[in-house]
Length: 165
Image (cartoon, rainbow, N blue to C red; front, side, top):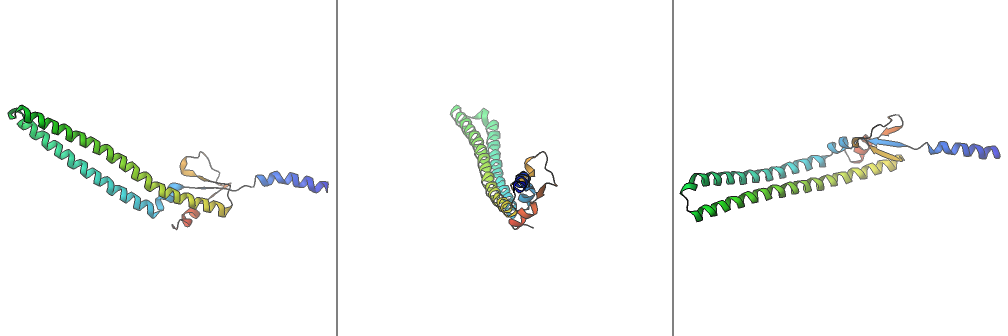
């Protein structure tokens, strides 16, 4: 009986080290997702919309500025002052629009990528639970070393969980 107890106590630490580890490549998974392609297309369309409006505003500013410079010498003081103010206001609106568009692009990108990241997280969690893994690490995040022999690559399982081939 003592020998059995000692054998069990000696075997117990071995079972602690029998934990399963897995890894996956999130960049590979995300780029294969149709949602990622859709998000990228939507973000490009939004960026084009902002860029086109900025270009229109810059063209308007340049045209009015050139007109002002051409006719400045013949303008009365009150008209000259009003036109200068218009140019300053237009320039200010252009700067504000640029800042707002940058913020809106960042917000849209964050929102779209968060939905994708949440979906990947749920798939990884599901694969981890189904496989009985203690840890599932993302190799994209710059982990310095992962032993391929002691860790299982579950990228294919995560893709499968997401319905990606």
